[in-house]
Length: 104
Ligand SMILES: [Zn+2]
Image (cartoon, rainbow, N blue to C red; front, top):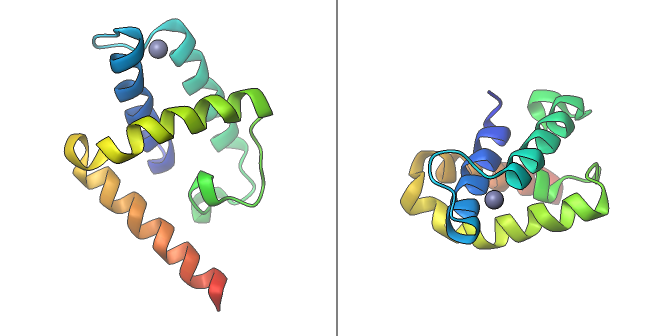
């Protein structure tokens, strides 16, 4: 699984557990959102070198899905370091690297 997708999956799991009472699997609504994210990541023109999605210049999510993903990220983002330290750190490194190349 792509790292970006792993991060999104982890965030959706945290969000769903807190908001929808999911246990091991996310609820149908969140599973659908994850499926959608997976299809977008698979079609991303940046491929493996893509920047992390929240900084991506190609806004490939439909507005309604984008709003839901943003809500998930707003909630789960700050909680990632305690739940998934490795993913959170790698996500941060990738974000920084991208911002670095952009400011050149
Ligand atoms: Zn849910």
